Length: 445
Image (cartoon, rainbow, N blue to C red; front, side):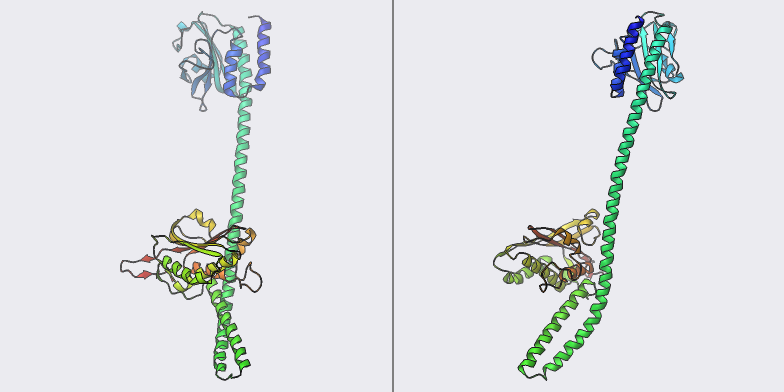
């Protein structure tokens, strides 16, 4: 092959190599579009594994490559074995004039008489080998060695660029992954900080509320007692009316105090074995007459509920509060649905609860309305004492906080989901009762 043709082939390779996108494309291009046109009748390219212990045939021209990008029976040769293995181990090119004199020769498709083999090097490390055989002895000399060494150098340079591009891409992916992880960790930390702040706030308010309610309850007891003594002495109609107003106000104050004590978890509960289906059914029976005709009351009570250990009176009060709120949210009418179910709670579901629960089985009672819904920005404050979305004079804002305090004191929790103009759903989670062999109820006091 004349020098001009060789230069044209190498120049074309130098131009094309810039756009070759992958290692696989590069090896096949070199075998089929460079080594072949340079006058070599046979070519096999080997790639070294990452450990630098083994060679594998990855591209070929000649009998090993009958069509397209295929290799018949690709060989795997350990470093140090055969001509290619010796070149891979030493990192130096080799020309063998007569393979019949070589004991280490590993015949492939057809026995050859001569062979030339040059290493592919990146920073002194062997990453592959370009090998060519010829049926005649002495077919390769210094000229062929110079040509194949040049091709190997250009191929190695491109391999290094591709490796660096892959490393850069991997670094980018690692950075992107780290960024996502950092963002997630930041979001998780903020969520935990928000929950911790909310828990501390409720705890502080609970302590203050409990102390205040306890002291104020003592004052109300004195006031109520004196009002009862005065009732016997007041005979005029105006005096009796005023006394009745004072007694009504004292009664409302007492109820407010009870709600505050429930929120602060200082109510004296009297837990007993109960069936939430029975409680729900009784509450609905008494609530139905108080609802306007425009509200439809429906229920779905599970047939297989476990018993719970609850203070029945406080459970009834909690359900009445939720029904009252649902009624107020459906001034234009709608559907009020109550149902019970058994649920299995897991740690990852704690995000949906106002306060976390331990994993396990719970009895859940839900109250859902199709009313106005609750604004999303109001949901975090919903269980704060004295917070209400109702107009002034239509609620003290203690109903939901009382429910939360009662549920926490009962070792349960609450969840709420709501969408504007679609309604709200409140769920109360009660732990199932633990009954010993002697059938006596065990309750955490």
